[in-house]
Amino acid sequence: MTSARKKRLLVVGVVLLGILVSVPFWGQGLWIDFCQQRAEKNLLAREPEQALAWITSAERFEADNPRTTLLKARALRKAHDVEGAYAALKQYFELAGATPAFQQEQWLLKAQVGDNSDLQAHLSEILIEPEGSIQDICETYVNSCILNYQFDDALQILQLWEADFPTDPLPNFMRGKMYEHNLAWKEAGTEYETALRKDPGYAPAAYSLGRIQLTLKKTEAALEYYQRAVDNTDQPGPAQVGVARCLRLLDRNAEAKALLAQVLKEEPETLQKAYQALGDHKATALSAPQQEMAKLELADKNYEAALKWLEPAAEANPLDLGIKNSLMLVYSRLGRKEEARELGQVVKKTNEVLAEIPKLLDRVQETPGDAELRFEIGRKYLKYVSEEQGVVWLNSVLAYQPDHWGAHRELANYYERNLSRGPSFERLAKLHRERARELAPRPQNSSTTATSEQAQPTGEPVQSSQP
Image 1 (cartoon, rainbow, N blue to C red):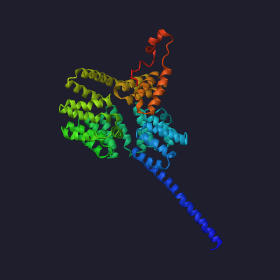
Image 2 (cartoon, rainbow, N blue to C red):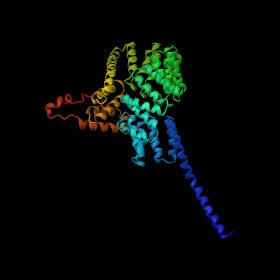
Image 3 (cartoon, one colour):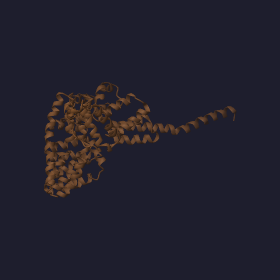
Image 4 (cartoon, rainbow, N blue to C red):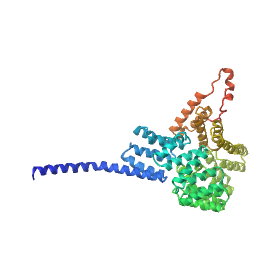
């Protein structure tokens, strides 16, 4: 063998050895890229849980990959895990800095919880040069507009969204939710039906049509829609509760009870995600199955058994009016007259507030920038209807008037009552308490101390218990 040939063989051997050594690294990079692509595909299909599974696989090989971390923040936001999304977005900032993708995801995350001021300000530019899915941007923006009762803004984007993506059922579904909110049952039903024509397996639309048919006392039709939702989702619990409600109304109580027993075996967190996936409030998961089971017991006059379902449900969802009404009936039947009387007063006041709210909402549409009006609505929601919706309204006050003392104080009280729910609640409790102290009216002398709160422009806040 000549010396030149030996040198050539040596060079080839070194190259082959380099290739063999680098294969694991090339393979690792290809796998991470594959996982990221699969996660993006799942996000486009609105399947955040599946996306998170692929993201977890990618993280096993590289925990600090910026693209993976950004996808994680996006998927957690879509899965309604605001705390997790905030942590992932913070990690992405540490890895990549304030990139355009970071800024957009930050605006989307804020809008997810109702603060859409930044997203509104930059909406045109990010729709022209989006970082991610245009449909995701539209969906998040429209949801935030609905939360803030900015229906005209929502309808404009829905029209553009539907024109650009005519086969997407979500614009029709979201428009249906707006009509349903305004008690326009026929119009809502038409939009949900259109969504189902576009995608016959779109479970949220079928589920919503079941709810509307029940409202219109069309039990047989409602049962068909709820069953259709059950057949087209991996998380059928909420639709099964709807089926059980229909079965009870059709005097098929044994079937209803068996179905509810199946649903009640699910973990509360899993059931909450299922309700959100179908476009319903997650708080419903903590009370709807129990309330239906209680109604079955009430039908058999098993008041003690009904009470065992209602009291935990009332503790888990204390603002649910349906539970209050059922509890009042049970207390009365069991001879617990004083408890029934006290609860009756709460129900009476709640109904009065519920009668007032539509009038206030009509006024908001006329003067959307009225911070005091939004504050009044926020307080009523927070105390009588829904804490989550109350928080959204109070945050909308701050979007129009950042130095509103009453809004900061109410939010501080709310977050302090819920400190156990995570670090973000602690952070927000501290932030709003500090701002409330800074903005609190200062008496000029001791003689004005007693009247200082009466003179404040934001009104006396609702009294809230401290932790």
